[in-house]
Length: 200
Length: 258
View 1 (cartoon, each protein chain N blue to C red):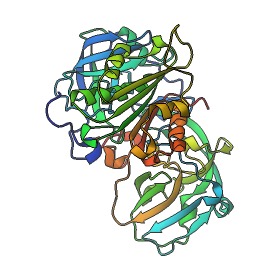
View 2: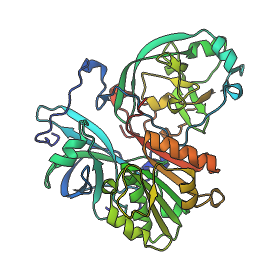
View 3: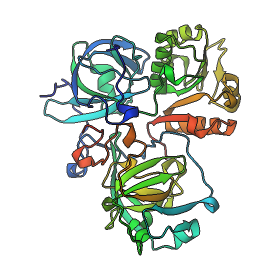
């Protein structure tokens, strides 16, 4: 039994509790978390690449990327630092679209970003309409603090998996822990199972 | 705590002590400012920490409702007791309870230590360049305390930005650190300055950082902590002054205002 904090009432969310994973609280603003300065890559120097265990290694310029089929969708996001933000609307390109026509034996992906950030995911978590590279948040270009010009978005996992400033996906045969995963955070990061740290 | 090596959880990944909930007891409460309080804990079995790391705190209401938040550790790894400094956020869910309602002898749950990149150990060497906005001073204070307790010879420079002198955390202790060899502490007050104030005035800017040093060619380890607008601004200034982005570690908290 956890100790009871007498006189602590908390602030129960005015939302459907079924939408809030354990240990999370709902915010209205959009907190920023990153481990270093915000990189600012001009769009004419930006590209997105597929690398690693693939039979083709396409690279999209910003213009190429914006000409790919775009999807606009609304999802809830959950940060390991405990905040959740409900009903966020994004526009971007599905990972399924980026992988179309690519053949691979890989079972894992490392997303890599400007500034040196990486995060690892099973490839299967990025497909079937569950992950995107997004460039627009609530109808506006994604602000650099929040990962613009483009970030990965994998809303069903803790938000550190949604790599800011993403520049590509490296498909790998072996799972390779990324920046936070190597620093003691959970390798998979399912908010509904409260997989925050390696021992969870 | 304070005995032996801190765990390698953060930098080494999975080799460390599991991060599990522990029941800890409030030993002492120290009023730091009108808005901030240091909580000193008895934490049996605490595995130790590195300066800059944080913990998760979990409160349980009488009906079982729970709320979790993260707070930076204020104490040095060498200190006998684990201490957090909590700034009360007036409309917050957890910090008003911690800062105002908690009493010595109360129990709560805590787990950690958490956090890898935003840490410093004496063996990491110097120089150290620490930039704090408001209660972002807390993890940097743990570094300065570690610097002192471990007898580090590293050149250490700290710039703290606070609204008023009364909002400045650890005021007397900062003055003591400023008098130590190899340590420089500078303060800027952004909102209001007392008569005869001889520190900096206003938001952190490039001349302040140049005056603080060390220069980029000294390759300092830079740690920047505070509210998001402070960190964005200060880290951008460091990059513009020529510091290598990879040598700048940041920790942001609070809303963005966007």
